[in-house]
Length: 563
Length: 61
Image (cartoon, one colour):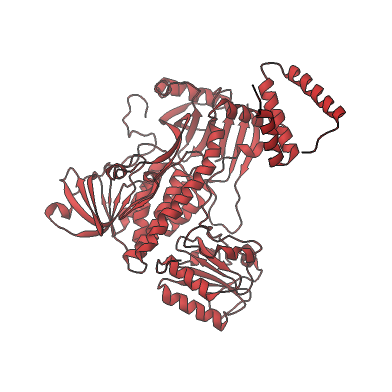
């Protein structure tokens, strides 16, 4: 919502483009069959299209709207998502415009009780978190979509019907330029929390709703405070309700405040009440200068998801598949991980490089990630919006003790989004090999990064198929070379990355790790091999190579063998 | 859980009674909750803590 007298898209800082409906070949009787139809051009749908385009796969992307999201909504982009944006070639404007951060503070009755410090290992390329309004996220992704010859973006195009066949999907699309039928091999449903595709297939989200409601309000103000997450429990500016404050670009600040028990939502979202509450909160944090109201909305926390994210040739991604509580910034970030996960798998299947059964792993991996998010988010949601007297009393006891004691302070940790570990996945069959390692990243986890002598990063070397990081002394042994050759024959995209403890002038591609820092990061010895998937999660690691297991894991990641 | 000698336990009983009065009826629930969190943390044993909670919950009429 916006202040009285302003249109829904009349922003203080963002100029909304208006995209016209285009006449498309189907309207003139063309019956081309498309590899992929993506429904919904939000951040998740556009990212899915760009992941497919990275592999040379064409897609048609439809959206019923004629422009970007009406408000700032999802504003936090986590480090793993920055890597996804990098891989799809869209990262530059994000780095230029987003506000990176890694610290936060929690206060109880005005006193600081917790200092959030997200880890920043020295080899990482990106900060743990970046703030950017969703309209910009969509604009920057859309710029990349526009620049791609492989993505056919159709605005003002609404899915009006869907018919599933064993080998594809027929869609009815309504547009001001005329209605038409479109045939595709696969449909990615990225059409959001109220997904029409979900309804058309007769599917329902299952899970829990939480009572506590929050108003999110964006304001513009000249306010001197670093980009940090601030959480205020029992602040005098909003008695009985928690407050969160985040900084965004363009002097825009996000103020989230919890509604009091029994408070009417209709009253709460009236402009004069928003202004009064935000004013009191700003007075409380010592902001005496003027401020302008930009946009506001209201939400309550839910943990809801589909039982299965894939229904034959229709695959659900992002909010269409799951709705997670806002605390911990997992909605956007998990949706982006969905888009990448289905993107590389579907691309390899469509190219004929992987068997279709690879797609079966999408739902188990990403639904597993959602359930993990629920477990964490449920904890933070209960802390942010205690549902009963027992939870309220326990929180008040813990917060009040936190003023003088260290032990309860961790409860105020917002448990920010961490990438999910696919250790239980059918694509990670030898997770037991973790036992051979004294440390380093576990099987299924996202690979850590390392800074190289020339200023580039280790993961810059990874390919868009499988990547092996092999630690060796000087050159690989004859057995190791044979293994790398076999991997290259199974996966035409395979990229070997050699990390050598001794300098080698003969091969410029070998990374010299003379101080052993990369080996320490991976708890590696000469002969250690890490196998990475296209999404840079670790498919397996072996202290010394076991060729059968490495070849079998690679085959599984291409869907060509059942475990 | 290790039990304390009866004399010490009696002192614990008296100290608790006095402290509940000191907290006052408005704050007694908060005080007791804080006490339970502090004791749980000092105890350092989640199984023993769960058992203590069960014992205290059982027979509340």
